[in-house]
Image 1 (cartoon, rainbow, N blue to C red):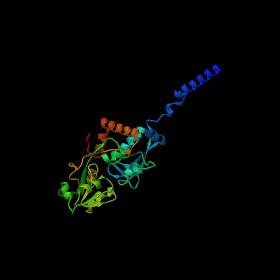
Image 2: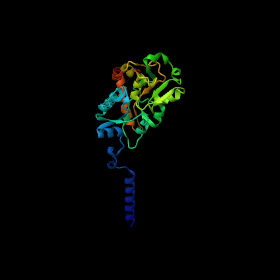
Image 3: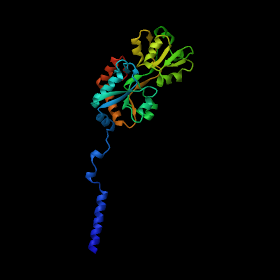
Image 4: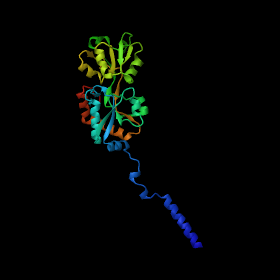
Length: 276
């Protein structure tokens, strides 16, 4: 009887020990959370999904006839895709819907690129990469009126028609700084420079990244405050939170391109200011 009780207690002790010690067969690397969840998802898919407005020469533009994308940001994307060994699929977004599209469920794209200024407000709800392009607010106007617009005060008059695209920081800047000017919101950003040149508006609020392209493309236009922008900032890559592995890859690529000179060459190709 005593021997049976001893056997029973020994069996209970063995079972308790086994239950409290993790067995090697029940724990493997395959069951552990991946440290590269976003990148692995992209690699399995075989392509990276890129959100971009396609209306921002020379950073991201979609040719309406062919659907082909080109620009500074598009070349950055190609470097990212090459780093991952995957293809690229572009997903159309817009300035008014950019934040909603980044945060959409189900997820619309892996990251957004093309003239997206790094701001504290965006970093509160999303991830933003290191800056890869200096940026700042400036203006486009007709060359014949370049002397007329030499300061923010020159713009802020009732007779001055200021045109902006909707939903982005250009509209926000105009509303916050031009309380007297006539602000015209026009849907298609890429058409505004031509409208200014034709006299349908006097000034376009734009960026130092965009203005040089249009001055070069249209001899009727000027950017008199190009070297004295109203604001100073940087452009970066935008993505939803929780994609820290993808953010790390993008930041490492930006650092690499800065150190090996390829980012400077890209700036020179598109006539943009290199400030790194």
